[in-house]
Image 1 (tube, rainbow, N blue to C red):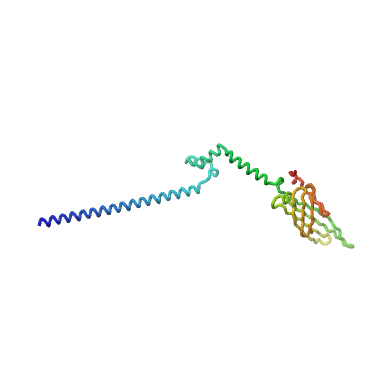
Image 2 (image 1 turned 180 degrees about the vertical axis):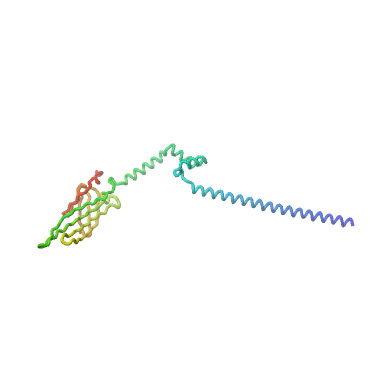
Length: 229
C-alpha cells in the first residue's frame, strides 16, 4: 500500500514538473514573439523616420528662396546648407566662380551683334496718269519695303519683303502685289527680292537710303547702323 502511495506521489510530482516545463516553454515562446514584434515595430518606425527625412529633404527650400524668418530657423537647426549659403554670402563668390561668370558673360557678349536687331520699314509713293479723254484717272502707288538692320548676319533676321498697292482715283479700285527675299545685313548690304519682283536687287547706301530698279527708299532712322565700324 505504501509503495502505491509513493508511486502516486512521484507521478503527481512528474506531472507537475511537466506542467511547469510546458508553462516555461510557452512563456519563452511568448517572450520570443513579443521580442520579434518589438523588433518589427522598431524597424517599421525607423523606416518611417527615414521616409520622413527624405520627404523633408525633397520639400526643403533652398536658402536663397527662404524669407528672413525661415533663414533664422534653418541656422538655429544647424542646417549645413544654410550655413554654407550664409558663408558664401558673407565671403562673396570664389575666384573660380567669378572667373567662370566673367567668361560666360564674355561669351554671351561676343555672340551678340554690334547692333541690336531693329525692323526697318520705309515707303515711297508715286502717281501715274492713266486718264482717257474726259475721264481723269490718277493711279497712286505706295510701295513698302521691310527688313532688319542686322539681316542674315544674325540667324532669324535675314528676311525682307516689299509690298505694293495701287489705287485708282477714277473708281477707287485697287490692286496689290508682294514679294519676299533676303537682306545680307549692314549699312551697305544688299537686298535680293524674288517672286513678283522678278529678281529685283536693291542696295543700301551707308544706311541712309535704299536704291535699285529706278527706285529710292529713304531709311527713317540711319542710327540703327551707328555702331558699325
